[in-house]
Image (cartoon, rainbow over all chains, first blue to last red; front, side):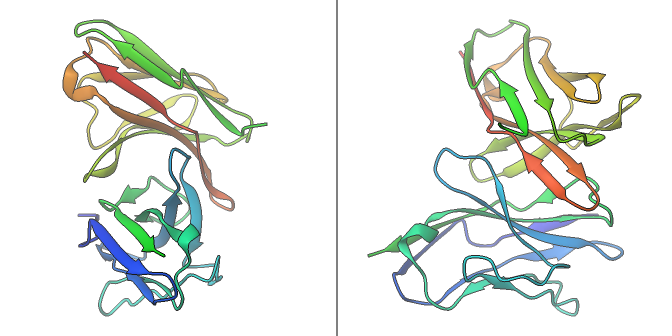
Length: 109
Length: 111
């Protein structure tokens, strides 16, 4: 079964502190993993796609197939990072996405 | 110049009423999706369509139906709305190279 688990519903850190949003998945095969961000009252935006290996807005995520994890990290949080973050997976070739429950990140000044 | 447009943006309806949410796209993507977003549950897939003649149920299709009128249009209907269908609904399109594009969402309240 395809499943994405984000164990933290809420995460609060201070500005300048490191951030790690956890994501674990289960999937039989080779999934594509994504992180999406949703700022207040806005549409979901793609933040990272594991196959592109990019760093967006200072965020990075490494796919760990042994631990079936795709944690999102940023070394120094900024106030504008406050948002809802969703981890998601799909099969190869942009098939239907399966989302985690989401983590609301709050960056305190 | 939105790529994926959803109408209406907000809607309040009464229990038992039929309601249609519309989605249109200018991306030229064959694949379209309807998701609902609920606090603490993330986004769950209702229906998806990989081309005009292809309609598939998602994780939570009960109480919903869809129509793919054209490549660019994918409508979601609630045949008889009930309060637990109160949610934020997102339409999305996808392409294997570009990935997903989401609409701005429709906030539906069933009273």
